[in-house]
Image (cartoon, rainbow over the protein chains, first blue to last red):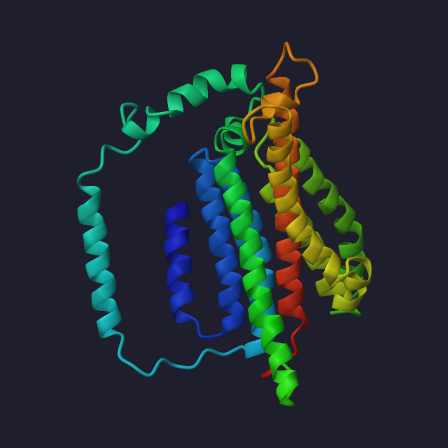
Length: 177
Length: 144
């Protein structure tokens, strides 16, 4: 059911040329994905998806819309080559899944390497019930620090692009950014 | 939108609860889904809501751009600083057991460590989201 709605939203996203509707549909898409994650018991991921995908990024898209107008112009090329590339990539991905172990099987390697240890020992070692948090912040603390730094670096990048560009234009005596 | 009284009052009533919810998501992250990242995003979303309804200038009077920029950097410093503190206490980098007040229960340190580290994540994510939002919302449109 959720997947059907996801697919329907995806097609609507492709067809609609009014960017305001597209932004709203993208939010709907994120919310549906969040529902899907909840159904699959990945509540932390669902939470993030709902907050970032449906919340903040919709606002940022709206901000971008205010800058660039509400209507998408028609593409000037035929869709055949992109369609071919997409089909080829999809076929390659489906072919790749042939080698994967069965979905959700208890004997899959992903459930055994370190996951057993985390699930069985983390309450004794870390003492908090949410295993996701103890893996994220303690066992994988270095990774999370790297992620935090990456988020910070992304902000620095945006600042350089937007603030720096506006300042350079002003220095050249051009119009306001 | 700024003249719509329902939207104005609604946003004003909701904002404190959203901010409170962000703090709950952070401090309750040990027991329920959530953590610093989600909390930071929710916190930034609260101020984005206020900015959409009341205008960017009003929000920037409360939360100036230099402050949120500082937040973005401060969070990374908090996270890395926790690691430095555990090193100074004679353990490995980011080994939170060092933070335990009672050495016979080293796992208590994990609580403090995780909470502090997630606080760093919260501050950075909030600062970054607010900075990016300010930059996008503060630009003048070229087309309409």
